[in-house]
Length: 107
Image (tube, rainbow, N blue to C red; front, side, top):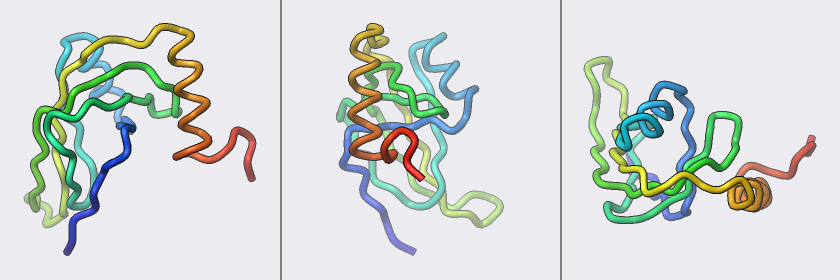
């Protein structure tokens, strides 16, 4: 049992519903496996499940717990600051592949 710190400025969604809630309602809660620390008040770039930059979000809460199935999970609550423009999204996506996800077409 230990905490993994998320100090990078990337927030990747793996669940389409959580991303939809963010874009539709301006708020969402994302569930991540394991204990993680997301600093409240930090702004981050949100990425779709297929690694495309989509928005700027502000982390409002990070709650680590053991759920009813005995799994270590972290709930990350966030507010939408704004959607990225097409140009911003393209640049942020390219940077994220270089920094976090691996190069496009990398084997």
